[in-house]
Length: 460
Ligand code: PXG
Image: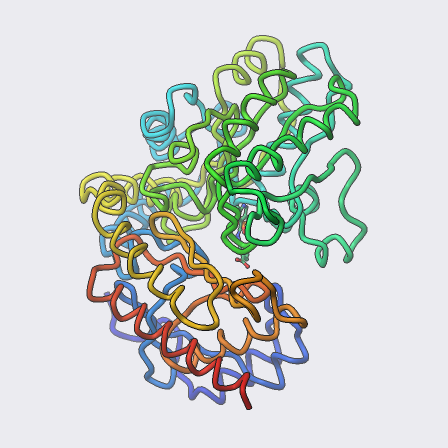
């Protein structure tokens, strides 16, 4: 291959100026960013990013919760390159298909729980969740219960940015822009013990939070409700980890009313909780599940819905044509990369390592951060975690302007070679699953230093 750079290099200032002139970033205040200037990430390897100023940054967010096998995997680059030469694109709309999409579908059936034997491909998590909305409604229509259109989700959930997925999400700032949610989507409380648990034990609170589903179903009329959807752990909402009692109770309620249960595994899937899927950590069996992100470790955009036999049998036997699909449903290059990515996760025993070795070590060290005066709770599972930054640890009291302290801490992380996200005043991490002990130590050391710097700023 030629050594000419793919994109001609420029100085940081030049990149920033061109960025501000032409590129509207997602989830961004455009004017504020243009005044400040973007950070230009130029390359990455393993668990480290490099920027245009030559800084090396420990990426404790796996990009955006997705680079599970780490950066710089030549096997994935090679899979994409070879597939592009062989068959860069073809659709599967009109009685056609191709080997990468078939191979991946079989592999997904193999690694997902036994009720899942079929996949519907999409280009992203948002498209996959839009597919779930349409599929749930179609399922009930075909099944002779067309009134079961309502889908119940949760406050502060994140399910994507398209109209239906953002409606499923429970993000108030998103709903305030553009007239969301769309009709037929309603929300119940999130299972956030630290904020809402009060005097209840986590176990008691888990049951109480789940029973809101029952109340909502009764209020709406059970025969009007089609499905409940939730992330096993809410990621973008601030790594909200439900008590162990929560998901079994949700499962019981869904079964009682016969409504479909959908698990959005976009963040929890592909090993993050030390199991292939988050539902296996919590012990529940959904009827539908959303996949994206870790399916390709972010090397290619790809999403999908795993469809259980319960749903697929009805759609196949009685549904006729399902009028839904995307140009890039089952994109051959994305599927070839996903196949290789899943083989890496399997062959290198990465999921088992997170469960038995590096996950417990990361969690042990992460919990040491709870000793810091700013930290009210350090929680996590496997390779995901959160720190609650609070004004009063004993009273579980947040800072008055929620979000300000998180941003201060995030900026210190950024300046000190560490990527952590701030969600309100909750610091969150989700490192690549290949992070080793020495790098975990580096993460904890840097996080502690940034907490100190944040505490110092608050004193001044
Ligand atoms: N479901 C979940 C659980 C997600 O986390 C999506 C669906 C949507 O996937 P796509 O591929 O359409 O983006 C996501 C995406 C954040 C942040 O601020 C998180 C996501 C996306 C953007 C920002 O943490 N997750």
